[in-house]
Length: 137
Image (cartoon, rainbow, N blue to C red; front, side, top):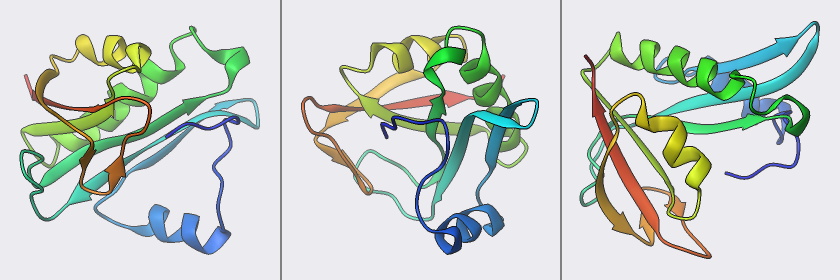
């Protein structure tokens, strides 16, 4: 997912449905009362080729002014803690050209599993997607 803003987009009803889903975690990072970042997880109840059923890190978006200050790392650590309370496995997918995402996730031991044009409902344009997996320590 690529956003131009740190604020979630879409309808209020769609956002409320995501927030209330017990199989997902949605987090926001605040600077005072201003949202400077947000992130979510997904749960897939079925496999899609090499993309197994399980908990996946979803998009993480940080306001450009607040990047490189640990916001994405903090949101990712919190989401992984939530996932690892439920499963020994965590997954995520990203575009092969998204080097910032690949670098961010290295410290949690994510290893490449497969490359494809799509995994579950995520389709990649302008490159190929990479599926990553990590196991709780």
